[in-house]
Image 1 (tube, each protein chain N blue to C red):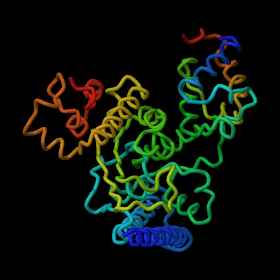
Image 2: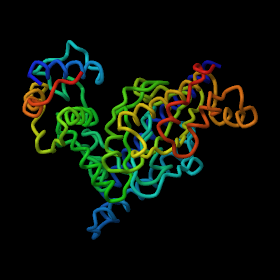
Image 3: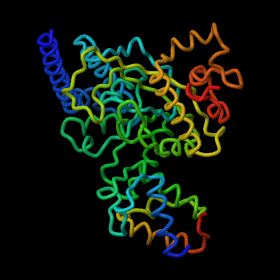
Image 4: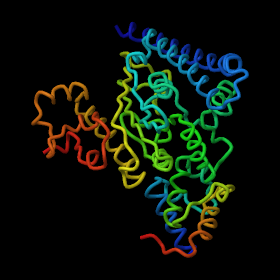
Length: 86
Length: 308
């Protein structure tokens, strides 16, 4: 997946499954404070990333991920070699 | 008449304030005096947690006795005892009122809950939550908040129950919020059963949108209903379990909207099976009250409006 594909997939996922308003989504948006995502949302997000990456993502790897931009940066490293989800 | 009604409401409001004051005071006493004293010298984490949770459960029973005697909420944890499975399981429930956690623990026994950061950091509750080994996610934010998975798994591996509200917050009045699959994912990863519980408060009180001082005219009744246990190995994934449980809750709420009381409906169904059976001869309410279920059984149960 390219960076643009990751951003697009993440945006659609947040709008469709996390009920985040599209206008609130930006790379600077903080997951908790700006998008109102909680610990259960974090699990959902992590599981979705794992499903695409086809590998378990350790807790240490996700420390410090606070904004959507952080998620994209992180996903870019994990998802560089996998096809974009349909 | 209107004057009497107003006086009753104001009286209820004052008693409600008193109940919450007593609740916070009791929590502080438990946190700072009773739990440290009673678990002093107990170094075994799980044992200390169980002792603490048992004591807190008794306090919750007293709290609900007080609420019931004062006619604030008709709920008797001694009458509505839940028969939860022995050992580790993930208990999930909808979340119509502010007192659901106290009601579920009072009726169901010790279980670990995921505590909001504001509770974990509060003077009254923080130490109590740590004594009971409830799950604290206050140290993590962003994606790292998913560390709740590891915390929950640790409790489950120790043989404890974990209570999670899949909506993550209180339900909207008479409805359901967005469901997270986290609780079900944890159960799947830990390989433990999911026990869905359905709560109903009629008329709604202490809900997310209603201020605590809004007292209804009649005494609200809180009821608990234990739905069939889900075994993760029988389901394709956590999302499917979450969707099935949400659909089950939705159906029960819909029945309420259609004026069908579950117990009455099922009693009626036993004598008149034809009118509300689905194509498989199952009553949707009975399906939700039966024994352990698999994917297909949850999926086929229709709501009243869907019956042919």
